[in-house]
Length: 318
Image (cartoon, rainbow, N blue to C red):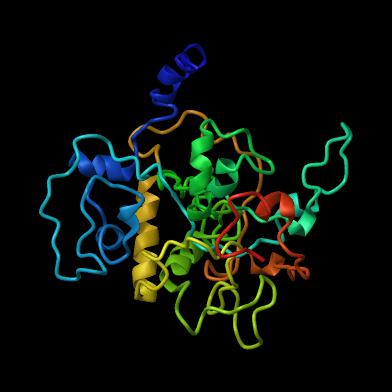
């Protein structure tokens, strides 16, 4: 691994990969002044929104939802913040029936069947890896297997850096645009940063949480607005988010802050104009992508190749 990894180190540290050339980096150096909404979003990101408890920004989380009177009296980290804790978390995302993996149930031209389990597959994330389960490589340490039930559903915490990066001709990820359509979280269920923040904010609001799968929200509700389908993996859900009490404006301000984390502000990428596709226009960031929602089919029980490996998920996953 040393031989194979060492050539990657200079590349990973290069300006092309680790540019640190965003508005936020310029702000840290005193070379950019955040707008009123960007600054408000930053304060929410590291306070009421509790975002920086996982997406570390080098500061304390204050005022925290559990300690609304607390203050950040610490000293900022001296290193460039990477906006990830390199840990894992289960944020309770619904199963996404648009995920092509569920339909890859027959052999391809090479005779390989990616997912013979079909909709019997459940993405247990780190839990499957620790069991050396379906679709994973062997765990490097079999003694970790005992931890699998406490990590089922957990996915690696991605960096928030460049989450809003788009081609130059499509300047945003948000409708009405012109916008560049991206997909967020591990299964692509969320289609805009507005939806992403709204999910963190309202996932556990009683009036918004429904015991349905995607595409089956009750009449009179709008999926991703005031209806969140049940999680694909209900075990080990991160409860530090889900009912943050943010206003609609505060959600928008966090989005504005996330947009300051895009590299290329102080040192534009030389090839950023090579995108030849088209942008999308129209609609609202709140319902972005809902026109492509499809009903989740009746789900069979979780396949034994996933949920039948010891130590078993606890409680059992349907």
